[in-house]
Image 1: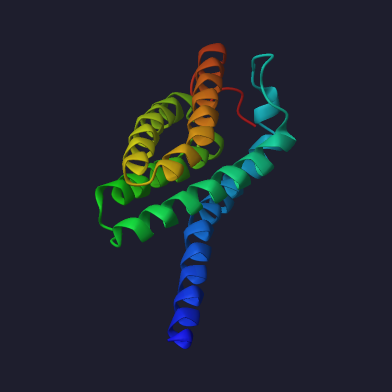
Image 2 (image 1 turned 60 degrees about the vertical axis):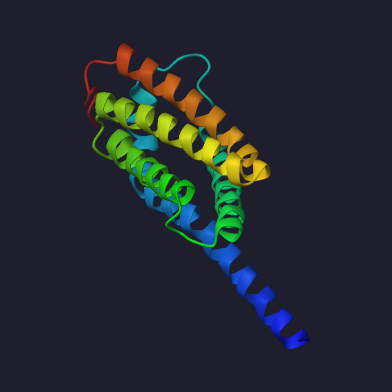
Length: 171
């Protein structure tokens, strides 16, 4: 009996690690598109006075992705199926999230990126609501993410409106 309990604890720890690693890996993927543009193209854009410093994005996304992964793990453990609606919504919003950096920083398509991030806002909100229904803490763990992406949406909208078209100020 004790050995079975240890095995279950190992499995739970491995599952948590995977749940956290998935969003972090997506963030790393996005940073591939971000790194060069942050040094060359992004500084040339007209941005609002409330633009956060570049150094803040890495730690912020690391914390948010970790919280998202932990929340998804909690929901998975309550539901027991990755095909349940809350986890399907989570996967959809995560895929949308992962697509934003390549579109904004890679392709420099500011208008398309604004559409993507606006869609992400809705999908993330739906995910948080569905997570909350299953496990209130998991839903609340997504609240900082919702605030951050709402802020990022406003920033994307400002940049789109105040710069010359989608691929403005090419490198």
